[in-house]
Image (cartoon, rainbow, N blue to C red; front, top):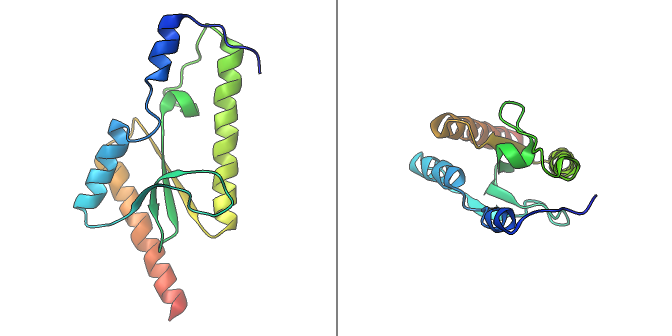
Length: 145
């Protein structure tokens, strides 16, 4: 990856970007909590896999990732910076590759990775997460019976 050439203002702005507890993530957690489900936050679902999920439903084995449109290359809203274009393209494509690898590793361990884009309506995303968790819990209960 090439060396990033940037200005002090850009460097300061980028350093303030939150990587956890973003407004979308907090709103999603509040909606899920209000729906009556409980979860863990910012945990590694699978030991030995150095990837942290934003919201983890352990018994259902569902790991929720709230992905930012810029950082994860949203097909609807991603923008490609003109300054340091090669650096940013490599960075974002690397994030996409890591996301796919994470999903595959979790699936191998029996987990479901669920991705929510930051632009999604929170209530719609919460309903999707809730339906997935309830469905997975039912499957696991039926398998044990």
